[in-house]
Length: 350
Image (cartoon, rainbow, N blue to C red; front, side, top):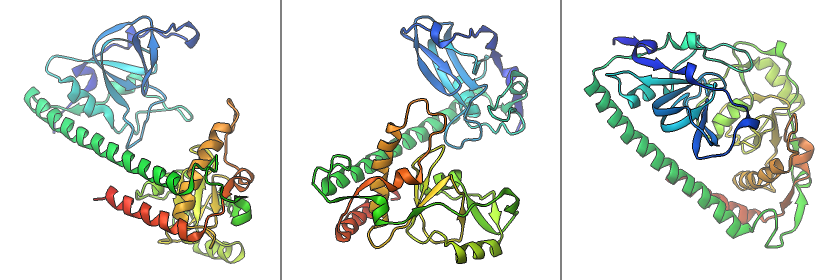
């Protein structure tokens, strides 16, 4: 299919952007946009048009869920973290936006810690060339699909809330202990720990998958993963014999970065995990894993809120998890709740 350079089908209005520091911004009615969307409102504007904003630096580059481009209309201010594009005659603005939202910018961005899509690199980007009627037709279909996706997200959000409501109905609010359950520290009821440290020199190109936070985040969503790191089968057997490895129904919890994402080990494949990034909770006879996962999601949310504002290195520690107060709930009630969760989960995939 024929493609056209972005610089040939758009007016690039980056030169019209005016940097403004947070201390100089006065609150007002005009949207203030950055790389990934709305940043707030200020008392002045520099654009009044239908535009597409494309992340320059700090964007969601490489994400399959979060776009790097979005549409804006009317009076607004755009900071210097987003490129400003206006569609030329013959180019539908929505078609432009859809073409850029999940554009593969591999090879175009640079920067080790904060990736940047320079204007020079952006000018090399190309989008499929189509006549205006085709563009409008494609946009119409994509809007229908987008609406369906949004409706489905709302349904899933409702089902997730339904599980939380059922939890509180059965066990009371976890923090207040409104039903006066016996409370104990989590460490008194189950084993909590991290992995045997694996050094970078031990990584190999194939073997037993080695999970970090990013893999656990995807697994917790039920997504397939493409593992990047491995250890040898021999090393895995050695660790398993000497220290043990996660078992079916154990919980792995992300401890740094994206804190508190929980995956219930399914036992489908052998794997090992990164010390410090993840914490393993042994789901002993005291706990049903589904119940424990939902309880810890409540407790870790409070834990994160209690962290000091401005802490340089926020993390969920083994000691912090061990000292969390939990209910000593009969396993029969935990199993009843887990059955309810599984029925709700079935609705998610209907």
